[in-house]
Length: 138
Image (tube, rainbow, N blue to C red; front, side, top):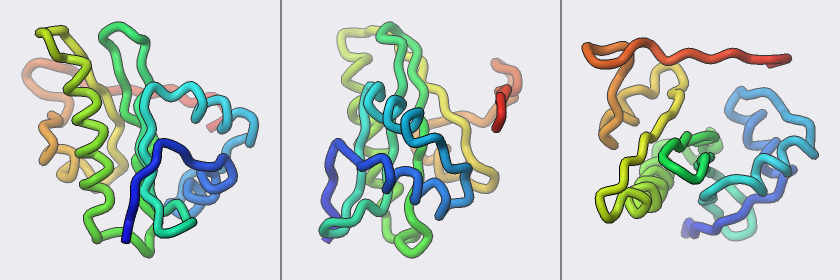
């Protein structure tokens, strides 16, 4: 049975990054990033974290969904969908009382359709240009 917690150990976070094909981060850098998340939810199978998603925010209107990942052996079981549902519920609460919230994310190649099911729009489109990124030592 999968449970959800608001924490993930730094080492498990880095191991998950490696398992999904992402770069391992400096442990202190990773720990700082996790600690400074505005919201974090992690899927656990007993004592093992198997998926996670987090939100970074400026505390005003700008947010970024980051680090949405599920261990390969656990993919296809609805864990990613549950993680995004929890993230979206948290984000929707930010917009209560009519407040404007912009939610950004960068989908990995081939996963755009997953995010579209949650109301995200592909860019570029008629209203917005392409999303862009700049990596330093990435």
